Amino acid sequence: MTAPLLEFDDFRLHFDTFDGCYQALDGVTLSIAAGESLGIVGETGCGKSVTAKSVLGLVPSPPARVAGGDLRYRGRSLLGLDEAAMRRIRGVEIAMIFQDPMTYLNPLFTIGDQMSAVIAAHDAGRPRAQRRSASQRRRLAADMLARVHLPNPDIQLTRYPHQLSGGQRQRVLIAMALSGSPSLLIADEPTTALDVTIQAQILDLLDELRRDLGLAILLISHDLGVISRVCDRVAVMYAGTVVETAPVESLFDDPRHPYTRGLLASVPHPRKPAQMLAGIPGTVPNLLHPPAGCRFQARCPSAVPACSQQRPATVSLAPRHDAACLLLAQRHVHEPDPHAA
Image (tube, rainbow, N blue to C red; front, top):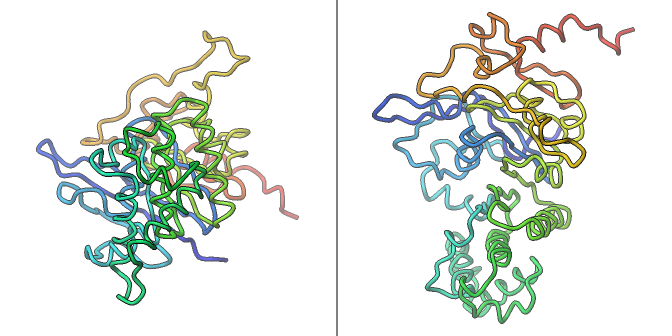
């Protein structure tokens, strides 16, 4: 079996605050293969973005600290790398795009100047003889804009961010990310600030880049519709833990974890009257003082007393379909094996 491109192994990330230790990520185990697209979905505050930013060392430390586990890229631990070593990975091997492009584009500089600066930063880690000239950087910037289907790329290079639409600015950020020829692209809510039509175009672009360039994509979203459009597999997060992972079709057709079922039941549907939409009762636990057992147990309609005492192990329910639920684990043990002789 091919080794994963990126792998979280029981990864734990805590924040030391004045009020105590905030256990933001608690035992995250995930992997993504080369060329695969993995979506991470969950409600606000579940740890999606912290998971993504941890890959590139973008979570400030302190107050953040790794409390356990490992995070590996191509089999090499990313934990403990110094800034120089991380720079050789950040933007070159692994690139990231964010949800609000105007926050990440400097309004005082043209698109061409900003893209050239990014390319020059990538070149800084190369031998001097392999570094590109200013004209070569400009040419590559134009090529990347053409790659993300921005018309008249040479003209776009002369423009300032305010002269572009939101969708165009997001394409610029994607072009910047591609300029280092990464193997993995992390997209953190890349369509949140865009209208529905432009969202679809950006998602189609990401899927096209994955197919044409062989990129692996880690897509963070709270929108199940976005995940279903782009991703091969999906991981559902709740309160800093991964509660279910499955191929997209399996998750939508046969969700197994109670939280996943609750999420899907709350999604509006054209044929579902509004009054039939279900919510998930209760509130997310305080991660300064998380519950001892399953973090979802206080809101779970199927919870039993053991759920508040025992941390659920992840059980394999079907090929590539895993869930962390005590009741599912017990049921799975007692179900007959359909492949048994």
